[in-house]
Every structure is written in structure tokens, then in C-alpha cells.
Length: 435
Image 1 (tube, rainbow, N blue to C red):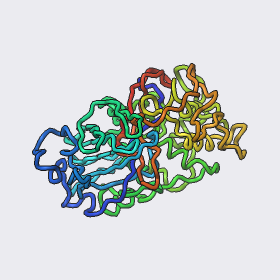
Image 2 (tube, rainbow, N blue to C red):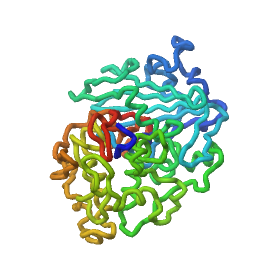
Image 3 (cartoon, one colour):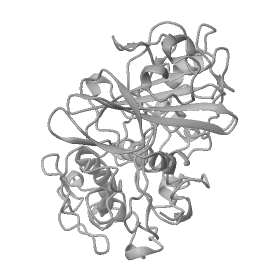
Image 4 (cartoon, rainbow, N blue to C red):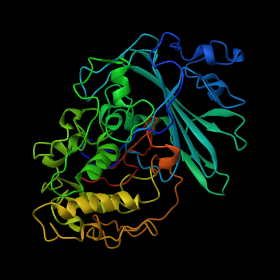
């Protein structure tokens, strides 16, 4: 995918359970690739190791006991992953802090490790690792689990069978890179916005501040998106931030969607509860702004009051053609969140549906959880009616809130996969954000 492409969905931000034990940066932590937690048989091998057993996530792999130096976290808003359940953990080297001098681009200390584990079809299918080994240098690996969940091996991308008779697609290393380049320091889901909004758990922004793990500490320990008068903007903007802006549609020159000029990432400094205004990038670069290339050139990214005429809604409502997230990232439409985005757009001033009570049905696509289709929503030559392949696409999100399995292990992803991308170009495949 070219940099001019508009890629609508992104990836890393997380679920999990609050970890007990020491604080994230305590001296009791393991800063050297979890060596203290690794089985003695692993020795001082390659980084990353060839199996998850030697990566430091588990202190006892046989019993699936998580190492005490690992801290589970869950983002406020999950990345859509076709219904996969995810768990996420982070380990910081002892005594080290995250450089938060740029609130939008945290810099992690050397030795940081982030894990994201996917369960699908009733069992663990893959676990992803990102590990910082030097300044501006990360290594990453994806580990595939065997059917009995007794062993793993490093994977370079494959389709694996699941216990329920379905399948799960593990991304390639290139898929991962295509998304993680959207952050200067690669980690996607462990970030200020999704840890600061209501619903984050385990290691929310407030705990990072209280534990002194951010340098300098942010002015706000909790974040909030104010009401713009529609009553629907907070969930819509948060979803677009996580699924589109974190990896691809932001001002980082390494991001896949940088050249398109559509900016969907929220800045944590805006989120003091004040209503969004026209200067916010997700509004300034979308409301009434036309696509600039491809088969949808000239059509509005967001047509206020008219979700059916908004290209963003058309793309997130369909599978096949110009779907977002692109294949193989997702095979199933995130129908509830598509409806939330549509409802917000329908209430925006300026269109025929603005101010009406029909926001939830005004997407022009009947995106219901039952059929997950987008009838008659076309984007160029691609129709939006083929939406229903189940959730085996290696993407993240759609997690069970009760299990706190959100979408963040850094795997979190959004690149174009061999389709003509909105606003120009063919896309890179991949679901590889590590939340």
C-alpha cells in the first residue's frame, strides 16, 4: 500500500487483568528478556527465542503461570479482531521509566517487552512478542500454539486449525511491521489515549502516573472525550482512533496512511472532557473533506448528517473489495461499532438526518450483528454485501468485556492487503499491531 492510501483500521491496545505483585518498574522486575523467569533449558539463547517457553512470559509454562514481572493490562477500547479473545502483558526493566515528553509518541526503555495472546475457537492460537533491544531497535516474534496447548514454535505466518473446526490466520513479520511503523517506538496499544479513557484496566494511565512510570507525568491522569452535542461522538471517535488512527492514519511519517492526509489519531492533550472542536484532526481532515484519489476520489470521507454517503462508513461496513480493515485483517464486519460510527455521523449538523432520531439506522447499510453486511454500500467497483466470513483473520478486537480480553498486545493492525486502497494505491497485507 502506498503512503497515499487511506487505510481505515489500525491496531494495538489491550485487555487483560490487573496483575498482582510488584509495580511495573520495581527493582524486583526482570529487565533482561525475562531471563529469571525462563526455564533453565533455554539458557541465553537467541532474541527472540524460537519458542514462547523461553521468552519470559511464563514462569512455569506447563501450568501456564504468568511470571510475576509481567503486568496485564486492558485498553479502554478494543481493536476489532473478529471476536478473538486477547490478553496483554508488559514488562519494563527495573528502575526505568517511559519517556512521555511527547504525549502522543511514548518512548520505552531498552529491555521493555510486550506480549499479546490470542485465543480463538476455544483455545490459544498465537502469542506475539515485541522486545526493545537497543535504541530505536525492536525485535518481534509470533508463536503458534499446538492443538493441545502444550508447546509453541515461532511462526512466520500461517493458517492454523481451531478446536471448533474453524481457522485462524497468523500474520507474517511483514504484516506486523506494516502496522507498527505507525508509532515511532513501535508499540501501539500501550498508549496514553487508550489507557486514559474510562474502561482501561490493569495498568491504566492513572496507575502509571501514581507509580511514577511516566517521565514527565502527564497533566491529566484520566482522559475523557466531551460531548459535541450529538451524544454519540465519544464512542465513535475512540473507535476510529484505535482501529484507524493509532497505526495508519496519523501524522507519523512512517504510518501507512500518512500520505493521504487523513488524521484519525486522538491527541491525549485534547481529552479533558471539553467538546471536540473543528481543530481536532479527526474532524478537520474528514468532515466534508473529499477523498483525493482512487475509485472514490471526490467523495466525502465523512458527509455530516449522511453516513450512507460517507466513504469511511462504506469501507468499514463491507468485506471484499475496499474493505477496512483490509484482508486478511478481518473477515467479519464489526457491526455494533459500525452502527456507533454511523449514528454519530447521522447526528452531525449539515445533513438530512442531522438531529433526527434515526441515527442508528442511518448508515445506509443495516449493519446488524446478525448479518454484518452493508447492503448497497459501494466503494468504486467493490460492493459491500459480502461481509460474513467468521473471525479467523488474525486481527484483534471484538472481545468479551467480562473477560477483559480487549485488543492491545501490540498486535493491533491496519494495513491494506492487496486491494486498491482508498485515496490511492494497492495495500500491504496484515494485521499486526501488538496492542
